[in-house]
Image (cartoon, rainbow, N blue to C red):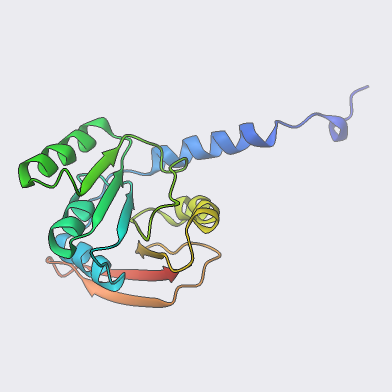
Length: 177
């Protein structure tokens, strides 16, 4: 007679991989309004010596703006091939190839150790899975700016309500490692 108490459970890695696969499909592209992107970079106090990582960079507007207006280097992490190619074309058009790069990479597996600033516009559940990775990889003093969705388990040092060009309300959360 088989008892359910003694059933072998799926391995933890397989369960986690399944959960991450579901989260990846939930991370749809919603462009950050230009005015809000600028305010995210201002809140993080981006400087020319920073290396910014934008997780789920979409059309590349945040890394491009960070390089153009704040003078820093930036890396966009984007799985969608079409969005990444569009962003790379803009980088070439603006002559920013030395400052901005894009990686066709899963942000759950991205190496963030060199980042001094990380920007995210991802759902709370996704931020929750990224939180431990960022905590283990980011150096002391690194800043994380989350748009609209907090990083569960982290305490923000500042939150700021902002409006977009279309008068839509957003909330920015600044975290420091």
